[in-house]
Length: 277
Image (cartoon, rainbow, N blue to C red; front, top):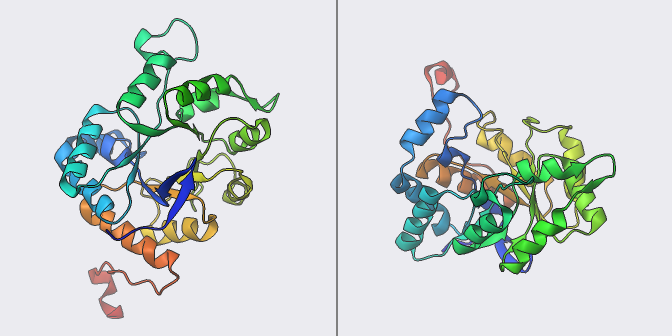
């Protein structure tokens, strides 16, 4: 196996690249038509082909919600390659009384544990609902991280708000890592990229960044060059791909960027570029 550069989260070795799943589950951040295309195209068999490419290149961690058909694809890739996948799960659950019983935190965390989750990170829709900018704290978060620990999983937080990292560090919350949006386009980021970069650099724990290509709005060479050259060595980049070829492309490009070698990539040749050849 060609190992990919690694870091450590809560005592667990993780690749610095993590497999994202929006482009497997139908969250394109583009249009309903694109979402429909993804859902129709991405069968468990096709997803497994991409996952196998990552596993064969030492990228053995996937970030996912609780999604049975995606878990089927992960298991297919594990069987095909003979290599285990580290599961980083971002569950959502009831925060107020009166919700569906199956969405109570205890039951959701039980499901996470049952699917072999290593790192459990309450989703942004949970974390950011608990952020109190008045008191500068994340309310009740220790209740949920305690439940995660009790089930043998490592707790983290998924957030879109950079201050979540600041507050969790200030409170010494029991979390080992954070998920944070970070890309050169500022896509879905509530403050400027240089501010988010500073929050990441000051974080006490490693940060898993997401949306490095701004949901397809940035070329891979542009988006990946930005994140790999501005993150710390302990931080990670989560990236989703649609096909095995895309998986190979982002892996190869990332290796070149991280090793500081000249970038070699196949350029897209069109009629308008004939005069450059």
